[in-house]
Structures are given as C-alpha cells and as structure tokens.
Length: 274
Image (cartoon, rainbow, N blue to C red; front, side):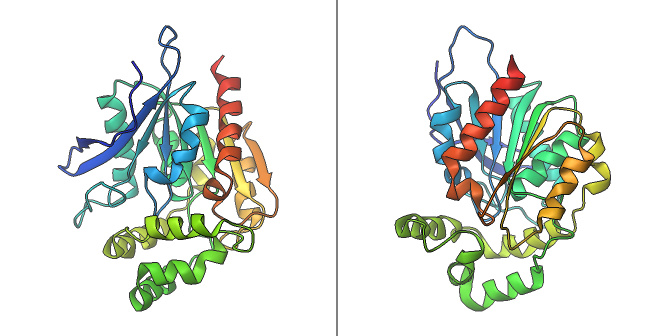
C-alpha cells in the first residue's frame, strides 16, 4: 500500500530521534526499489517536496531530515561527524528493510551521499549528486565569515543578505524566496556553527575512484561557492559518471528548478533500473 508523506520518527543507535517521510505510489506488483533523497544544509525533507510527484510513481521515496535539521533532534557534542551522517542513512535503510538502495543528495546532502557510496559500495545501487563538489575543502565558503554573519544578524538576516548566492532573485518568485528563508531559518544556529566547519574540512577527491555504481552529477554553471573546475573533478575521477551542467544557474538548483532536477534523476534512474 502507498505510504503518505506524514513525518515518521526512528531512533538512531546513539539515541538521537531522527525524522523522515516516505512516499510510495509505485506499482505494488513490481519489485520495490527505494530512493533516498538527502537535503542540503539549512534545509529539511520539506525542501524536496516538488521532487516527490515526479519520483514516487516509480520508487519508494524516503526523505530523511538530517540530524539537527527539520524535525530531527539537534545532536550533542560528539554526535556530529560525516561518518555519523552516513551511519544514519544506513540505519534508516536497515529499518526500512533496504539491503540496497538508490541515493541522491543536494549540496551537503550530496557529500553525505558520496561518502556513503565510497564507504559502502555494496549498499548503493546508483548515486546522484546535485550541486556538490567532493567536499567543501576547496570551495569558496568561509565558515568563520558565515558563522560571524549568522551571529551578527541571525540566520534569517544572513539568508536574506546572501540570497543572491543561491538564486537569481530578479526572476525567482518572491513568495518562494520568503518560504525558502522561513524554512531555512528554523535550523539551529548552534548546529550550523558545528556543521559548516565540519563540512569545510571534507575532501573526497582521492576517494572518488571507489565509487563503482552508476553516478549522475548535476552542477550549477554559475555557482559563486565553487568553480566549475572543482565540480569537474567528479567527472574526471568517477568512471562513467554522467555529468550535466545547468548553465547560468547559481548554487541552489535543487530548489530553483526542482522539477527539472527530479526529471533528470528519474531519467537516470529508469535507465539504470531496467
């Protein structure tokens, strides 16, 4: 039976309560295939709502809230590492009976997705990366500047000031931009003060060759946070990676053109699911 997108909870092995939602409108007589969608930092599963109608007709779509985001609990000291974020994906997959699954992520969520495929290739059937270089080590993000800006103006003020780094504000729906800021501003500022510096230390470049499953990388062509050359590393290091550039778009392609991204992912998945 199809499952609704009502938020559900599970408890991680370290005791933290984590939220997730499931949507499944695939044909019930066919073998079930599960797709995990991992959201970006300062986001939640709600930010991927437009992806669901495109994908849930073909897959059981699971959208977790990363620890510290959305309705998931904020981790304590020692409960926030990249390895722990990967473990959260695997534990939820185990709880849902998924020995093997498809995995797609946006920005920081894509870093988690890539790390999962690197460390646990036997679990990941396909991998899709939207708007993420292999870690933020060489990105233009300055964690100290971000955190100082958040502390000085609050997260909402910081987002309002930097919205042009994420969207073309001249063409975006003003109502959407307000909603985006409202959603993102609910993230714990204390959590971000730990999350952003942690991600800034990640460099997966030397490990990309360990990704053996089919991979799709969809990247913004006009990202102020990373250069196209930094994205190109993925195509160079992952054998057979399908690499797609969305020309002219800034960083948040998964929010700015969600249906386009979802259709891109559906095309890729159906090609590799047959």
